[in-house]
Amino acid sequence: MRRLPFLLFLLTSGCRIDEWVEARERAPIALSAELPVPQALPRKTAHYALKARLDEVRHEVAGSAAITWTNRSDRAIDELRLHLYLNAFRKGSLFLRGAGGRSGGLVGREGRIEVRSLTSPTLGGGDLWLSAERHTPGDPADQTDIRVPLPRSVLPGEQLELNVDFVSVLPEIVERTGYQGDYHFVGQWFPKLARLEPDGTWAHFPFHAFAEFYADFDDYEVVLDVPKSHHVGAVGSLSPLSGSDPGRARYLATAHSVVDFAWTSSPTARRESRQLGPTLVHLVNEEEEPHVRRAHWRTLEEGLGDLGRWLGAYPYPELTVVVPPRGAERSGGMEYPSLITTGGGEIVSRLGIRSVELLVIHELAHQWFQSLVATNEPEYPFLDEGLASYAEWRFLQSRYGSGSLASVLGVRLSRTAGGRFAAFLGRRSPVQINQPARDFPSFQALAREVYCRTPLVLETLARTYGRERIDSAVAAYARTHRGSHPRPADFYEMLARYLGTEHRETIVELFDEAGTFNLRLASTESTSQPDGSLETRVVIERAGGPGLPYEVRVEFAGAEPALLRSDGLSSRETLSLVHARPVVRVDLDPSERLLLDEDPTDDTLYPRNGQTPQVPENFLAALTSGIELLSHGLSP
Image (cartoon, rainbow, N blue to C red; front, side):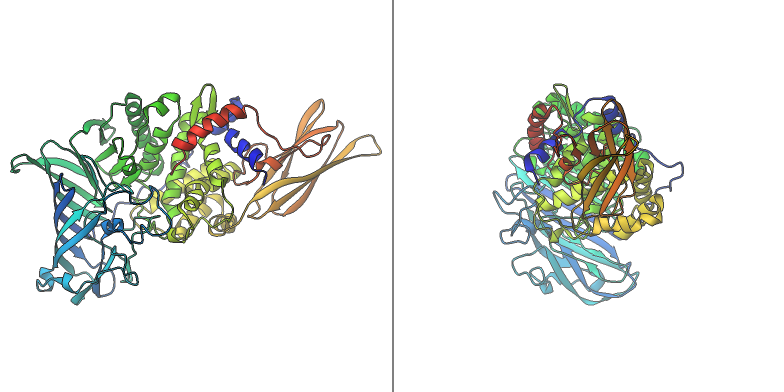
């Protein structure tokens, strides 16, 4: 592949400021008239009554939990599986071995969770922790996936009471968890039961650097004990409690039908609350960044409205948004039900680069994907990050058009163009989109396939078969499978229902099979006919991928262009037409529908001069803004 022309094409694709590009990019979310009503969230599997006392000097949390858990499977179970995910930040853990995660590796103090005791009044009150395995099965260096044998079986439908005492030692911030100075973001901090599948098998796994979530919908009541000078944000609704020790403050956080719980505490944070429609939103930030603050409120208000109308109304009464301070950026870009962390960047925001809006809407989209449908992210990361990315792209497209990623000095760059660049840069050994997170060779590979190629597939299908069909399919999937832990087959079925069942094989191939997809103009030849006219034959070749319909535009000297169409099923095809004027240019996919085309530089031919790859205009200006975007706007 010709790297320089390819890079320039991708950086400048979508930068033109003509009416046609703007109309194509500013595509409103289009929905069918009839969409299913969002499903109600399921009944809880467990109730967690947690107490947490933050030691702001030692950066530790002394915790206890009273858990009431119900066996909702159809089998008796004789063991528990516990996630001790804070142990991922101990040296030697699976998380810290091998390829790095989103935020990189451990840079300071290790983190860990120490379980002091685990008892069950239901099972006689003995300390179950004495017989617990001390490490992840088959991995002595990892302690994030612990098996606890039970003295007797727990029958289907039976409730089990558990009491846990533990201490959580926070790491210096790594991968969205830990402390920086007086700022604390406390995630993955308590012993959490794995999800028990309906067939009685535990969905247990060690904490891998590329994935996090798969859990039941549970209820939480959490008492947070913090220094009186600290401001607190948490999943759910927060209210002050009386009876605190001198110099301390206590809060009760309550959350219903959520898949996890996290919180933050800092003495320098400021908390601003606004009622945005039915949702009370709290913005917790520490830096004085007026452009960042305005971008947050604008995106939150528009995002809750747009995504709610599209994917089904946001069901929780409150939402907390945490903007980490400088030095704690690695706790940004994270999602929990009714709590997200984002990021700042005042200078970038002032320049017209929409990195703040991108991050806010991406994390907000996670309220639906994964928090409300609750897919198995370690097994199917594209159903989480990939669909959240598509929702992010669609929101930015509909709101900002061709400037959805940046609008700097008259040059506008679209989110689609930026995502296309990120998807193909450095992609040498293609892998399939749909595979477990642990099977990706690097996080960069996962980011290309999941964060970028997933929305590229959906955007390609939307431009090819109709935007309303794809937006409606995604809406129906999110609404129908709210709370049901769906799998890829459920998503494919919804796409096929709206696109047409004849496209099911194409859908499956696009997500499930590794490979390339490249259409190219192999040659064009014009010959004179006896009547004085000309016949031109255009040869198109496809390498890899399923057949998708495409168009070819033929331009003539002094005459209107002609448009040729193909169903794209053949890997090599010849299209011909008879005309009067000489051909001066041939363009494959002139409307830029096939965003999966990995090398757009071979899509243009100039018959008089032979093959000449097209490099769009204004590439120097776009390249300058593109470098800035790579630093701020394209990291997942």
